[in-house]
Length: 251
Length: 138
Image 1 (tube, each protein chain N blue to C red):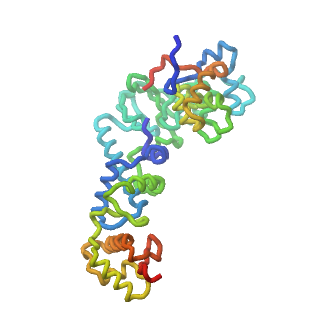
Image 2 (cartoon, each protein chain N blue to C red; image 1 turned 135 degrees about the vertical axis):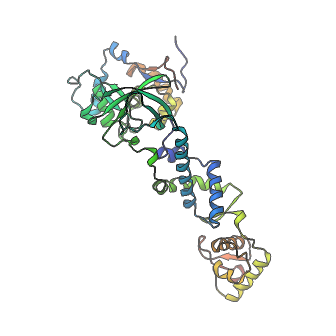
Image 3 (cartoon, each protein chain N blue to C red; image 1 turned 45 degrees about the vertical axis):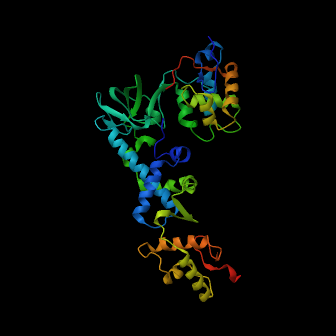
């Protein structure tokens, strides 16, 4: 039985980044056009999966009846869909009163034949149950808050091996979005740092560089940081998330 | 007829074995819930509502107490629970729906499926756990 998207098992045990997840991240980056942290990208993945689950359910349940949620009551002849059982559907064949009120309070028991087997399910329960929340009530923001950091390491591992992406520390971006930082730009940066006599962040160096100004400022900064990080003339004396550049020859 | 059990062979508790060997599963269940004895329990089956699917099974009242009061909790099966006892507890928790050694391993998070299969094969003499040969797996 597949785990529900709002269960811990789904995100902790089952989750593996899929091609659809990466496609959604490409689209997201093309939308925002600037670097994102891995946890922000993970949140995008969680929201995409929730949206996909809701859309799939809308398709699956179209015409197949009401979604089975144990807090609801049902009538004989009513068609039901069981998302927690992989979306199988059946018709209510009988309703009887529950016989364990001491444990559960008042409730009904409905009989439904699923895949040729007659089974019984609780209805009208008044106590908290995992299925009491219909999948339609899923809160994408709450789920992303809860699970983004859990899936972040697996997403980072997958994207780290994807040639489309580039990162410096926890700033991730599509390579295709980075502005060109050529040898001329780097030579000029070397001169700027020499004249400054102190370490500078990319933001200040960029003031005197003609790097594609149509790109977002954060994207230009990451582009320059990445370019300087691979040029032996430059040394980062700041943090990897907030580099401060100086010349390697300046001790 | 004997089949060769593998790590994918489902096992369950043979309740008739308990009766025919003069063993009392109720006493085992009573121990789990900490009841003095099971003599006051009625034989009338009661509903048990599965915590995940809300499927209803009608089972022995003492069994229902185990499921509602003790099963699915971290201390129901612990690393110090004897392995054969842990296997029986897992099947009790699964309302005796057959489980393979692979599924047992996933539930117990101990040893490995091959070792659990060896233990399952010997668990008949202690707990009447046998291959569910006629049970079709979905």
